[in-house]
Length: 206
Image (cartoon, rainbow, N blue to C red; front, side, top):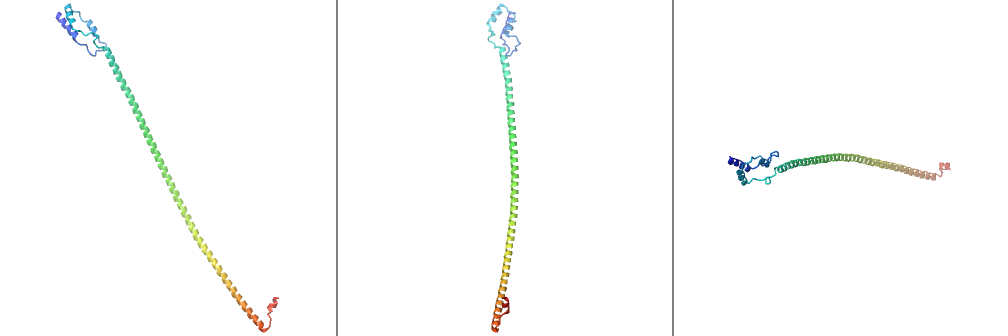
């Protein structure tokens, strides 16, 4: 019986503790306390086998705390990363919206400017056409006036020529009558000289 007990004690002392034991598990020191006492000769053999002390074993509670902290950090980091990613996405969306609004504004302004430019060009073309039409009418009127003026001047010249011709004819008639009267007077005077009489009319004039 002592040999079997020795083997069981040796197997219990040699088996390593579990690596990731829960905090509720009893530590190896407590398990060693529940091991039944062996006879003296067994204890002598047990003393020969090196049993790892509690100081050499890693502190499982600290390891668990470190694992939990790393898990918490790992959980916090994705949360912060997701918040930053959401902020970046929101900023990108805002910039995209603002760029679209700016492009729309520039497009609308360009449309308004082009529309106004077309209307102004149309007004300028209308003004130029109306001015050209009025100037053409004025030129036509001036040409008609010049033509009428020339015609009137020609008529006036013709009238002046007619009046001058008529006056020359009247002068010629007067000169002819004068010549006849002079000749008649010379003949009558010669007759009066020949007969020795005097004209009665002349005496009557006095």
